Length: 215
Image (cartoon, rainbow, N blue to C red; front, top):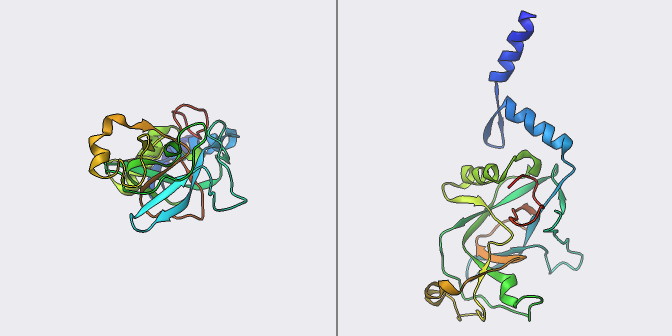
């Protein structure tokens, strides 16, 4: 019996290196249990455009350039949490909106709602199972570990818009001076970056149960 206790104690103290994170065995075991019990789906975005003149990406629910594009599901999640996807991370630094064009007529909301500005940058991690994270704080910490202080998981509603913004209208200094008129957008948005476009990325949504982790 004593030998069993010693072996168990050694296992508890041992750590594992996983995707750049040092995890205790307790966390590793908990993560394995969450995968077995999951059955959940999480929300994902994909990059579907990059505007070279401004160095910005358009990321969102669907790649509309692909006629067979995959739709996200911000209400129930769209991707099995046990699958490995990159995490879309964001750093909001109040960068003013570049003068990109807002095309189309919109739908339930004005066109600008669907192509808002994040006020910052995005980047992606290496692929990881969504079920690896217990809560949003853990995903935020994962982004910060990859990219530094101020980085956190990107969200469905990170895009901000001002009604009638388009091109140079409400861009640059004009965007900043009219900050009080900003509204929250959704479904897709622009940000500084040039992330990969060959894989969908985990994102967080605050007001729907479509995450692999708790809020």
